[in-house]
Length: 512
Ligand code: NAD
Image 1 (cartoon, rainbow, N blue to C red):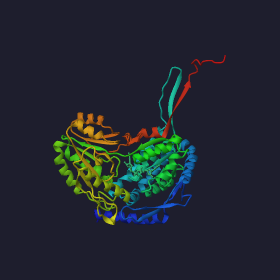
Image 2 (tube, helix red, strand yellow):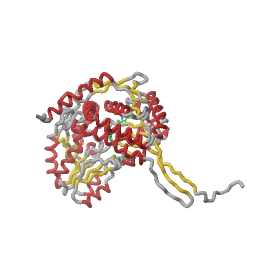
Image 3 (cartoon, rainbow, N blue to C red):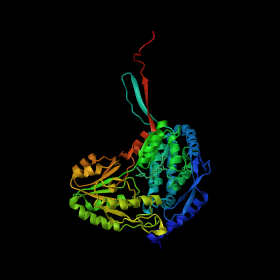
Image 4 (tube, rainbow, N blue to C red):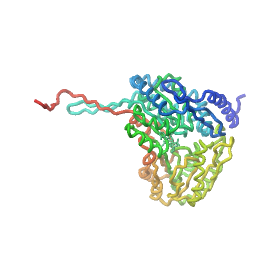
């Protein structure tokens, strides 16, 4: 008889899968991938990475500095010529092989990501699959990457083409780190760039696995290099290295500013995906059941450690009381638990310092005069890790810190509004401009608000559903540039104009 799949036996299967992987990780440690070899730091320095679930040391990680970055940038420079010259068909084949390798190890990636970051299995199970899709999508675009325009003139035939910019640096954060790093690395490789990746120091585990999978898939040595370490050390050195032509960065807005300054002497091209304080606006004519599902999902999934989370709920006054009542019941019922348990909706936060930051907003909310309707305290979860109770703050005003600052946890701030103008005014009155969500059955209003919102991405009557060809990125302090589809190639490639004379035009004759 078939075994019945229950939440408890999936939890046990996940634990059984994780145990030998963690044992091996601890024994092997995590090294840099440089020029196709897994190596320790030149200095021999290491740091420990710990699980947010129970504080267990997961691995000793090579701590890179400027010397290691120099070695990786040199390897990326040496590999660039051949990778750039490789036929698009061959590059496509190799990137599909990486996608195959990710799919084969999707379950391993999922459980390791849960243990290393505290993210719940229900979301991480899909993150690895999405990472493979990122590689497949850009693999299929390899052949189009160099496409340009044909612009005939009176006397010249003009065409444009694109060429890869050179070795690039990719610096990534700790939230959904595996999926997110493939989102930057896959288009860079498809464009013909070589890469030095600096993963976040709080989540190095799956970046190590990605390095190994890319190598095993047969991608030539030096095409992807990974240097682990701290932002102010390895990250800074990467942004300053003269051989690195561009930096694709995902992280905090303040770090983006620092990187821009660090990269200025070498005129780095930069692409920034930064913080957000995204509004979800619910009008009184919306489908309130669907809106409620989306509101809860977009702030309490992924522990609220999500750049596109809808961390500000703007709800129209006439429906506010009823909507907040239902919302309160849902937030109270959220399941906080072990990240490997498929029933868990919220796992422990990434790090004790991040837990402290999120918890500091409980007092800030109270001092500002807002009401903590649900949560507002740490949570005693399995393993005694960095758990926090999902939190709902009501009665907030638009200028309060809880309505202005990115908390980056399961923390939702509710503000009420009178009409469309006021909603747009409140939505735009923050330094950020990443995403916006609008719920209404009036399509004219949906389009007016979409047009007026200062944000790079707007979803109407929807939660965030990513479609890979569309532009992803933010305005204001939320970023510079767009990812996705051809937009990614605009960043990782130089546009070149080639003009061929028909041989008929008059050339001015000097010195005769
Ligand atoms: P962070 O800025 O602290 O760190 C991100 C990366 O930058 C890490 O690898 C870190 O080591 C490195 N770094 C730090 N200082 C550096 C320096 N001076 N030079 C070079 N590199 C440096 O961000 P985080 O706390 O890891 O991630 C959370 C942030 O990321 C949130 O603000 C979130 O909104 C943002 N984020 C944005 C998007 C988006 O698409 N807009 C997506 C995910 C996360």
